[in-house]
Length: 323
Ligand code: NDP
Image 1 (cartoon, protein in one colour):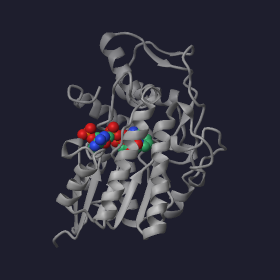
Image 2 (image 1 turned 180 degrees about the vertical axis):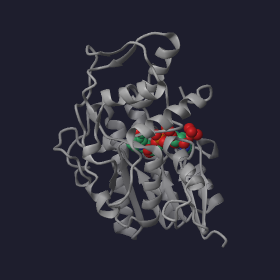
Image 3 (image 1 turned 90 degrees about the vertical axis):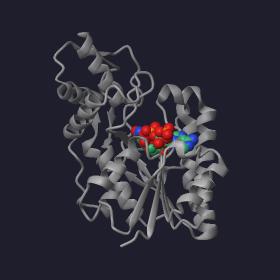
Image 4 (image 1 turned 90 degrees about the horizontal axis):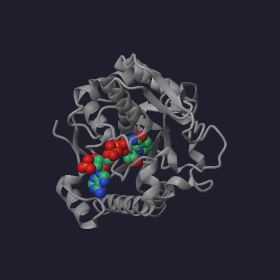
C-alpha cells in the first residue's frame, strides 16, 4: 500500500524525536509500530529554522504532511531558563506560530504539539491535572518558556473554534533516555547525574549529588513517551491537552534516581549529598488519570530498566553525545 499519511515530526533529532523514530522503526505492534499507509519524516534544524516563517512554509510545501507531531522547541535547564527568558518566550512563540500556521495554510489534518509540566501555575494544588494550565502564573524562574508553551494550548483552541482544526497537545513529565543532553551545566537532573557519576567513577572522586535527594519527581522513559505520542497522533480526539506520565504512585525521589544510576554504572566509590545546595520544588505531582481512562493497560518500562538502558546508551555513545 502506498503511504496516504505523511507524518512530519519537528524536533526529530532531539531526545523525544529520536525515541519516536526508534519506536516507529523497532516496535512491531500494530498499536505503536509503523503502519503501511504512513510515511514518517523526521526534521532537524538543518532542514530549516522553524523561527522563520518562509523556511517553515518551504518545509511544508516540500513534504506535504497530512499530520504533524510538533516537538521542536528551545529547551534548557534551570540556569539557561533564568538567563534567557526573552529568547525562550520569543523563539518558542515564533516556532509554534510558524508550525501551526503552516499546518493551517497547507490543510494538515491533525497536529499534536508538546507542552511541559513547567506550564502549570507555581501556586497549585496536587495532583496537577490538565484543567489547571491557565489557573495562575507559572514559576518565575522559567516564565518565558512556560508562557511560550501555554500559548500552544491557546492557539489550539483558537484554530479549533474559528476553523474547526484538530490541533491538540500533550504534557510530558520529566523525560529521559538515549539522545538526552548530558551537559554538566545545563542538563536535566537524570542525565546530569549520569554524567557526574560517570566522571566520579573515571576519576576516582566522590559522587556528590546537589541537595538533600528528597524532592519527588515523575520520570518517563523517552521510548514510553514516544509510544504515547504515536497513540495521541492516531487516536486522541480532544483539543484539550493530556498529561503523559507514569502514575502518582510511581513518583521517585532524587535519591532513588541517584541510586539507580550508581547501580547502572556499577559505581562503588564515595557517594554523598551536598545539603547546602538548593532542592528546588519539593514535588510537582501530576495526575495521569486522563491517560489511564484512555489507555488503562499501557505498560511503562520499570524505572530501573529504563535507567539501565539509558546509561548503556550513554556509555556506548560518550564521544558523540551532547555534553
Ligand atoms: P531536545 O533539545 O533534545 O531537542 C530539540 C529539538 O528541537 C531538536 O530536534 C532541535 O533540532 C529542534 N529545534 C530547536 N530549535 C529549532 C529551530 N529553531 N528550528 C528547527 N528545529 C529546532 O528537546 P527534547 O526532545 O527534550 O524536547 C522535545 C519536546 O519535549 C519539546 O517541545 C520540549 O519542550 C518538550 N519537553 C521536554 C521535556 C524533557 O524533560 N526533555 C519535558 C517536558 C517537555 P537540532 O537538533 O537540529 O538542533
